[in-house]
Structure formats: C-alpha cells, structure tokens
Image (tube, rainbow over all chains, first blue to last red; front, side):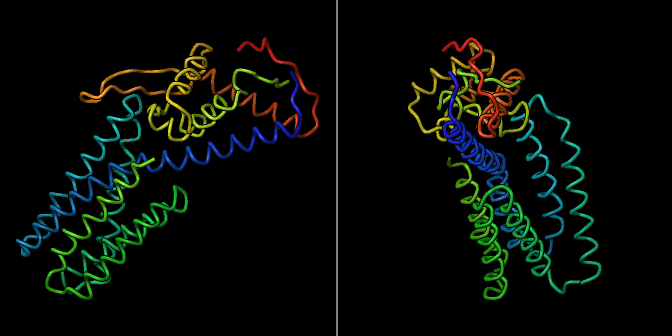
Length: 182
Length: 107
C-alpha cells in the first residue's frame, strides 16, 4: 500500500522526535551514575579535608583514583561487550591531571580552597558544555555547582570544604538522580 | 530501491526503531526506559517488541539486576538496515519518487 508525501513527512517527524528524545535520555542515563558517584566522593573527600586540612593532597590523591576506577567499573558493567573504551578514561584522567598541574604551576594558588574551588569550577564548566550536546539537565547541574562553589568560596571562607562536602556533594547527587528520571 | 516496510511503518514500532537507532551500535535499553520514551502501555509495547523480535529486527535479553528482573532491548544489524531502508523510502516519497508496494507486508 503506497503512502502519501504527507504521511511520509508525518512519519519522519515522529522518527526525528523519537530519536532526539532517545539521544537525550541515553546521555542522561550514561551520566547519572557518575554524578551520583562523584557526589558521594565529594562528600567523602571534602568531608575528610574539613577534618584533616593538612592532608588534603593525600586525601584527594586517594579519593580521585578510587572514583575513576569505580567509574570504569560502572561502564564496564553496562557495556560488557565493549571494553575497548577503557583507555579513554585513562587518557582523560591523565589530561586533567596534566592540565591542573600546569595551571597551578602558572597561577600558584595561595590556599588549598582556591585550588579546590578552581577544580570545582572546571567540573561545572564541563557539565555546562556537555549540556550543549547531551541535554539541558547537565547545564542546570553545572550552573548549580558553579554557583554553590562561588557562594561557598566567597561567603564561607573557614568552612569551604564542609560546604562543598554537604551542599556541593548533595547538588551532584541530586543532579545524578534527576538524570536517572525519564 | 527502498520500499515501504509495513512492519516498521506502524507508528509505535516506528518509534521503537527510531529510538533504538539513535543509540550507539550494540547499546541496550531497558524496557521501562523505552516505555517512557514511547509513551504507551506496557502490554502494547511488549506486543510490538515481540513483532519486531520475530522479524529479526530486535534482540531481547531477560536477566536479573540484583533481585530485580530486567528486560533489555537492542537493535540487530538487520533491524538497523531495515529501518534505514524504510527512512530512505519515506524520503523518496517526499521527494516525489515512485511509491513502492510493501515487501510482503506481513503484520
């Protein structure tokens, strides 16, 4: 049974709508567990940094690799047939480590809070940029984390780590749960 | 020459195929998430999935995630090709190409 151009056009519109929705939700679904994971890790890392401020570098040099390893594990669990992407995580981690090392070598921050706030702002920026391709929920999440980071840095000088542990970590967690929703 | 595929052209099945085609090759989607995109009843969606599975366009995997039963659906290579051929046919129709009859339009 042949169909008319109008019917064909209507069908293609349905295809375009379904594909746009599918791509967005797939992007959210992929990102959600990582935001939840890093929400928990921010709570842990910043929480420990608040209690042991002299050991911040040690704390994050333990927490960060744990986060990367769990992140790889999450994606491995989802794509059991596709393990060839693992090397990308290593490259991304190496690229960020190099970027932050180079940046701090040039800018030479005066306090650990400056270092932490800068890293959080870069993370926020990444989420905002991701949102341009993968959906506005990433943009909202990124902007929220940036706003909370700036608020904590400028308004709560002595309790920045505690603020980031509780409010920043919670913001990541909530954004992650929001991404899980269809 | 692309042809009308009546199996895929049914609106719910067209949405299912479009949704799966938009995902990376080999990616799977859980039944619940697929249902939230398609927006129909579980029974209706399940029936259309069976139709597409019987035609070889989809694979359906059932397992347990923890204690929770989980159904995951993915597009087969044949499904991907059939969907692309159907979309090409729709574009041909819009561009004024000669409409074709269904290839054994079995429902």
